[in-house]
Length: 373
Image (cartoon, rainbow, N blue to C red; front, side, top):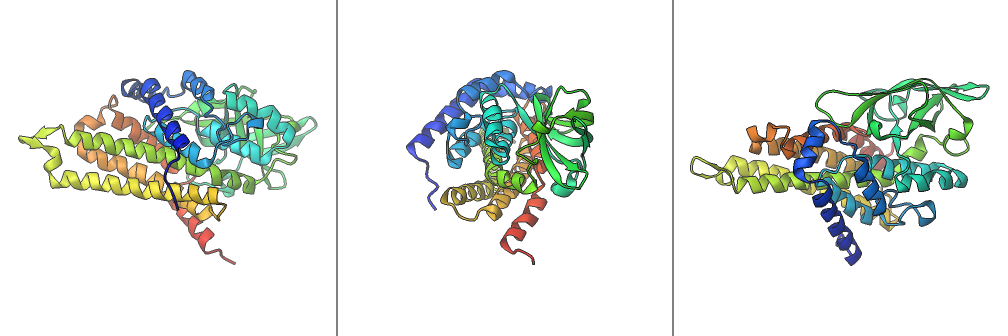
């Protein structure tokens, strides 16, 4: 397993790192997170110009035709920001889902606009707040003489404020889970931001929202297995983003231990402080190697599902616990909402449960390794 970067990937890494420094400086980023205004259209436009929306899609669909490792290299650097907005939700997950599920005609209609940033498609999947999976879909899809009617409430939708449309999971009258596109400005769609220790989380309510039959993904609305296939490629990219964010937490914390003086000496000399930095590094390394092994398996054409779930579990765990260990080092200064640690902390808490908690993915990992009859 060779995880070394190619010359082109090193170039992508540098371009992404320079982008973060120029477009998401720490003093500006903290204000966005503090004010819960993290959707920045200017960042989406510049990312689209660089070809970062739909990176893994074929060029004929408007994408860049890049490999998962190329995409992960970019998103790891974006995690250092942490760069906010729907670069993953629309540019990776929805893009991959549409590519997997839709007909050729739908791909040609939907994907170029998504890759250019003109349309932002946000997944709205689960209804139950504490669950992930097909059983968490409760939104109802009813037939009407002119098409369908959607009713339901998605409790936690990440990046919903950026949406021009939602990729909505709904349950038909026969009990089947299907996926369809719903205009974010359609009558009956209500978007409400959650207030609390989270970021970019919204409740989206669909109240008698009319949609046409053409809005179904594919010829029949696809199914949950189609989403799982899309997640196999998308989840490692999200994990790479969390790896980059954890790396940034580790870097700024270690730098702080070499500059903060207490009792006449640098705090980095205190054993307990050293212990916390080691704990962060363990979280980081576990997430990094699980993530990039999963990506290597995808590119090598090997069975990857167990590795994908392991990557999501370790990356979410690592980012969450890594920020907690870092807060023990930073203490009071790190609790100021103008400090980068607070942005990382609220994002780590939000991503911890996004698309399934670590516990959920560990169970799926075991199921993939040891299938039950």
